[in-house]
Image (cartoon, rainbow, N blue to C red):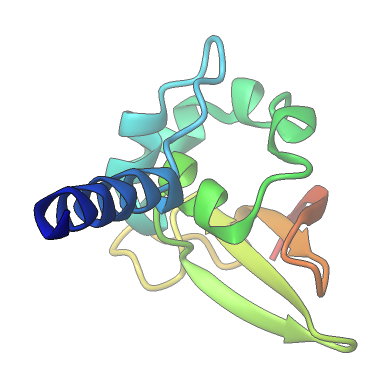
Length: 126
């Protein structure tokens, strides 16, 4: 009886652990791996993907922060906003900190609600 309970507990833990780990969302025509590898946009890969990046906003809406990070990688910047809202900022053009950085680079901002869901994806020169 004890072995069965222990096995069941272990199986439950494994299932729960695998359920909690977010998987990257596959967005057709978008290379998530290349985007994640180009931190701060310094390598210029994100800039070359600019057209497709500006079209993925609807695919990103409704995702949690963990899902966004699994898909796009760690954000280049975090910003806090009123009412427990948060912004993730991803540089599309090279960030000012890059050797070839732009003064006002093109960026993607993802706003999260207090319920941890992305509610808005916008693009601007930062």
